[in-house]
Structures are given as structure tokens and as C-alpha cells.
Image (cartoon, rainbow, N blue to C red; front, side):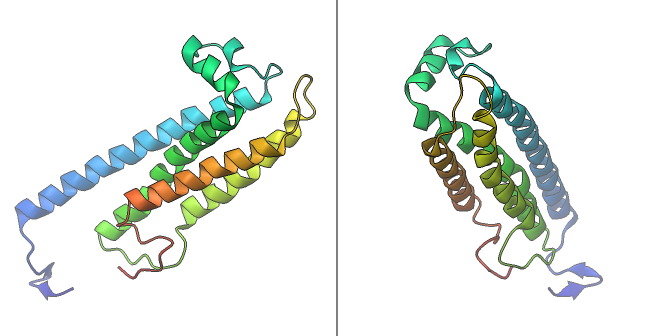
Length: 174
């Protein structure tokens, strides 16, 4: 980066204000994604650890959605854990994207906040299934584990594709 008079080349106050506004908007978006994750996480825990496996008996679910989820167990896990993962990855992966945009040195093969989140979610799934085996009327099913893992991987790939500026996981030097 070339400095002219202590400021980056091409620096202009209006441009700096625009970048500041853009970064502030992105920070608000991060907060919203993290808030969505904070809502999804306890919802997933509640649905996974309740004694009645039918979503139709859960409060706040429309009949059409709960009926479809009860008929399509694998899709329920892909969508549920995919949504949970998507909100988490957007909330923390995008933080690395912000660091790239303000040209902070951020190199490495893995974006650690979302890498840790991915490992946490991948370990959470079998833990919930094992816990379900101890709850009356519930059982542990390997298809549920695999479908939830599929949702997590699909969310990872979607975020990676949508936020190609990040450079996380690609080893790209920015």
C-alpha cells in the first residue's frame, strides 16, 4: 500500500466516509446473523430434547410446516441444522470478510471462528442423538446424524460460495 502524506494513495474524505458507512452496515448485518443464530440454537435444542418427537405438537409451528416436517424426517434435519449453521457461519465468517475489506492481515487456511463453530455443530449432532436415546419415546438414528451433517456441510459450502471475498479456507493471500 502506497502512503501519500500519511494516508493511503487515492484516499479522499468522502470515500473514507462511504467505507465507514459500509462497514457500519456490515457490522449491523453481523449482529442480525448472530441474533438469528441465538434464536435458532435453543429452538434446535428444544426440538431435539423434548419427549414428543412430533413437531406438530410443538407450539408456534404452523400446521402446514409441522405436518410436512413430521412426514419428512431427513429433510427436517437438513433444513434445521442447515439454517442453524447458515446463521452461525454468516455471523462469524463474515467477520473475516470485514477484516479483509479493511485490509487487515488475515492469512491462513481456516477462518478459526467459523471453523470452531463447524466442529462444534458437527459434534453437537451425535451428542443430541445420544441424549435422545435416553429420553422416553425417542431413539438414536444414524440417518438423523448424517442428514444433519449434510445440512451443516451445505451451509458451509453456501456461505463459502456467497462470501468469496473472505479468503478463509482457500489459502488466498489478500
